[in-house]
Image (cartoon, rainbow, N blue to C red; front, side):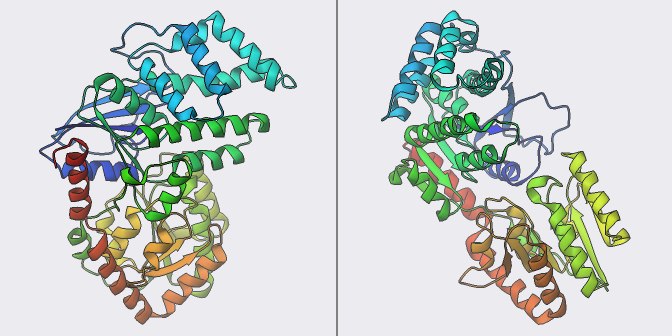
Length: 463
């Protein structure tokens, strides 16, 4: 069996939940040959964040803003492509079906030549006069080009021949995966850790660089891609049931849908020995980037220190992904005079730290189903998490509460929960016991691997 996983800007360069999930998937199915197609806006200069498993045969890298793609057939007739796009815009129903037919025709062909054609120029002028004539034309032109180029780049990023194309998003990655499905005849599985079109919608709405007049069309483009992915895939998985509501809204077929939770090596974390220590130690584990909202976590810790002076905050994770944000965190630590109470470990093995930790704090503003939370629970740590993704359902599991849930950005509430845990060792032990139980029963690596192996066999008709 040959599986090609398609990613956007994550594995193997960026560590984190999706990348760790991919690494575990490949490592634990050594009998399956894997390839990875990595889509990114630029060429990475950093080293891989993971050791490549032996059954990972190739990593193909494509730049979304480049025309340097390999193994494509003849160019797509630009007049036909512009005609199809014009028809697509005019449709009110069955857009996904029509868009899929365009992608099927375009698979394996050059489509970026459209941008240089007179047909496309005339089409742009039509759109401008009809919808955006009150805007300046240069701004309109470059905004549209910015929308279109990565879409064309993703369509042209033809994956190698494989039995299964496994896309990790319903964005640019799935456009590449669909090209593989149509051109080579493979099956398509889509796994959403978060709901891609909703995440992009939130980003676009909040963006200050995208003029308001262009926000709705851009949001609709991402919704169309997701809707097409749901219609054309052979199987659709997500990590938890709440996500399926949003998939249903865009027409996902219940017969194709599965919930496959994340899984971890429970034994590896549950076997960590506790280390005696005199301080109350708080762990924040993950990349030091804005989406993890480390700044709010530091503010919560500052409030904790005022009540429990003998506290320490260990921020365990790489600091080089967004150095500007990392320096903002350092400046806040200095401003709050926290000094040696806050320790940035950089990239590190959490197994070396969990034994001396008392609680995990997650202040993220967006999550799916974080492996960090599951790993900490398996290690016997109570958690304080934000009300995002599947974090609250895990922490407040009906089979045993393992921590507290607060709203994102609410550092006062975070501090209050940390103080409660600092003062109540018995509660910490109860949460720890519950967490171990929930993870060992519901979130094991064995269950996750068995589920994906069965799904691979199912879509290939081997069961």
